[in-house]
Length: 325
Length: 158
Image (cartoon, rainbow over all chains, first blue to last red; front, side):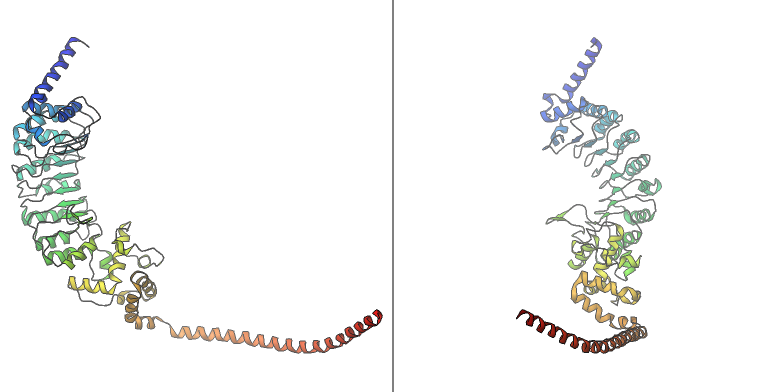
């Protein structure tokens, strides 16, 4: 090894120590994990902050709170240089615009990531803008989750949708609870011909939003398998609209409708969608794809398929559940 | 909708108690839903009520030749009580489905053939009886010879 290479290695180690050394308060386990990522070890293909009871899922929630600016930059660089990492979950790491800028300034070169979860953080449109070059470059990225970021808004959503529409691999987008009031970008950028999962729950997308989704679900090229609409103010009118749009849809398997305002009329529309009893032909040709109206929620030993908060009789819920299965 | 396949009693219907989970493809799901909900009068009544639809017979629009298969499916999947209910409502349809003239013709043809067969059997029997009675007379002479021969042997023995 030449003296210049030795110097360079020493610099890398010095940087690592400055960012992640004992003095930073970062746990030994997480430091070791970051070291493995830095060395492109194939022992780690997933970084999940907050869950720490099984290897190779590594990292404690408080660890990233000890990250200084250099740490965020190096963390991005190590991940970008690593060819084995597939999934990164940085949920609830208090990532601000400053931190995300440092992180993505290096992460932009990453080519192995398939899943990036940045939910429940504190970045805004500025953070989304620095994400764009990475999203354009991420040739394998399939899943992007920026849900529960209260500083995001419709403009951020439009920027994400326009960027993601250029991707040939992205099929999962989670933007729940991001202050989005207009989802027309989905229509403008034809994203639903690529997305299989779209979570827009806890956003006030309005009647126009449900109209847009209904139109998209009726399009032949739609490949959507799941739409999250929890807590979006869906009432009976909107449910009827969605149910009508799903009559001939053969791709959607899940339509999450919990935490809404659905009563008898909406529930009957859903029941007729999956089991229209008016004739043998109607029953036979009822929607056969839709099987879930609530995200994974255990009841007893099995998953619920119908939200508990539908304001209808137990018999109606039971019949709907039976027909969905 | 392929009626023949839908009502095919030889195609194993999915386990209805397992709530469509066993259905392997989209067509199976449709078929299972029809068998589960349309062929069970009680369930259909309940669902009609829930969906605000007037309950009426499902058999009106079904091709009469398929009715026997449907009845088999009802019996297989929903038990004797449902089969009985279906038979009650299907009585007139099933009766009208029967071609009485054809059946009478068939019966006449059958009985004519049977009559002809019996006549020919009777004729043969009479012929056989007459032959048999002639043969019986001849047979009694032979017995006498045999008895005689027996006596001769007895004599020789003494």
